[in-house]
Image (tube, rainbow, N blue to C red; front, side, top):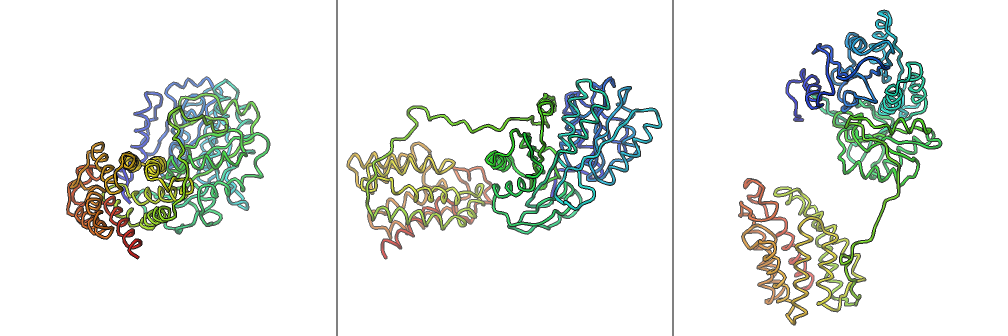
Length: 539
């Protein structure tokens, strides 16, 4: 798998220097590459308790992304998924620890515990005040003698960091950190494993399955379950966390690295609907696992002091802040935007014809998506099928017996249910056809009038490699019958395979090699529609 990296051995060093270079001078590092990789606050004066965390890289923005006022003082970074050395941790301790002492916040992995633990002993021998806490928030494997430390670690960073920033002593900061560790619980689920740079990707999770409880290094989870969507995935995670949620709770919704912001917002919606927490941190990538296509949820019962600590502002962009879960605010549409509902009327033949057209588009979804993948973003079939399903559901409220009202009603429906430019184009088309019908034009003439209006507004014409290449000849031939229209539409659609330079639509931005030999998806949709209508009406 191709990745935006240079030499594997330089990956972490270059990434950290990228973080430093774009920090605006807020961060610095010790001069110890490649073995010592310590990022620390450039403004640190050692007068307060220092907070140090770290571990293997690959979990960005953790841990260097949380170095700053109100959270970590320093992050000690290892190579990808590898603990930093004792010398690296000791260097970090010595660099930032003053009379107030320091707290090491360590995730519960053997390498981290050993290296941070020995470094703490050596620092104490040198006269430094050092305490260490171990985070073990992962509840995925209940029988594990040493539960893993995962995204719940960030609650410890934030609450302990707020106390340290306010001047609390080492004992108070350590006590608070231990209390949070005792209360926090986390679990994640994923649709895929992660890709370690320089190593083949493990193909462990089959299609249609999700794995519950993966570790942040790609370790296998507790079970693989059937994947049924975001709502079910969130419900499964929350069910596991339920015993750990008492009183007022904050949830941290963490992107494991490869889940899109759009998906994370859907998951946040599912969490909000569950009505089990009062506040939320995220959704955001905070403790990732390289490119893992998954998410985790951490929950923490809080009192007012904890909530204040979590809410205290910090300058790091990686911390998204804490927000109260609130009902979705909905306000009425402005005057003039609410469409006038048509008066429904029945016409069995018209209803059957529209339903048949919708079924044709739904059946062609995969075919049209595959064509669109050659010249666009692969969604033409899905866009048309989504609108077709909505249209079928709206037929009972359509003015089917009055074409002067039906055409505008179709345009309004499609403009609301069909995304992108297609909905706008068809709204213009059907509204213009309705205007022509109201003026006494025949159906054939009205449809041609609609096409003319689309060309005037959108600028596309025959030969530009759009749906017009099939629609225009079909409408010209329609007075000769539906079979003639279907034949003309097919010839027009097939001709687009020879047009290697599109002059309109998204295909205009696509290289010619991608277009050659492939029909335009919009034109193909028109041809399939007319062919389907011809078969039904002639039958």
